[in-house]
Length: 280
Image 1 (cartoon, rainbow, N blue to C red):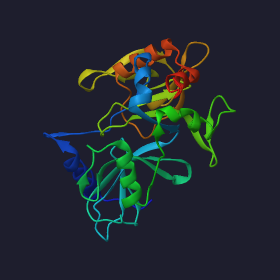
Image 2: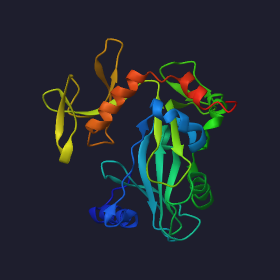
Image 3: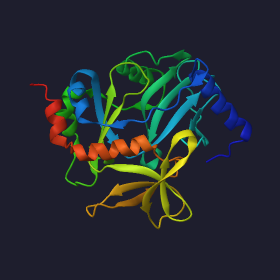
């Protein structure tokens, strides 16, 4: 990866922030919440569905001039040059993407396209604009009522990790995106529930608290210091499964508590299929 100067990094981050600021407050990426039972009746009429691939989130940006390529910013604020391929239309473009294995990129939402703020447009329209104006392939989203059709495109023979056909991309669940404008409300369903906690130098796992504080969860492990993804095993204990090098902060305490509440609700795939059944 080519070296990025401090001035280039600052320019990319500042330009994105300026374009996403509303009322003096920058709009950050909205984290999806797990599907709860109170969400089920809304899935079919109000949401689109796609596979949840096991990739890394990055926000892609280009200023859209003929000499400009693409840059990306991850959750830690790290800026990377991604490509020398410009957009097909002038003007700032900012899109949310997922980087998969072998560096392949899939876009799943657009904030600015060709100099226009598109956050108020409907989701399928934003995805169509990505395909029209950028070289990045958007994810295919379909009405939640077509969930069964999506599942036919996924190899589910391995209960621990599904595979998207035909390419074999790892899939660890489903994403339900509102049909309306950008701004949150996205839901996720995973067959293995996980939480992201920060391990300190003493082996204590911490979650986020008010005003940037870190709260002890009572979970201890031998993982190195940093943010790790934790999964509950059949023993009823949480274990770190992988280090999240793309994150600096753990899940906020409300996210952790919400995850525990969702686990208690036991929403399995058949429950989602019933909620999204077009014949009902």
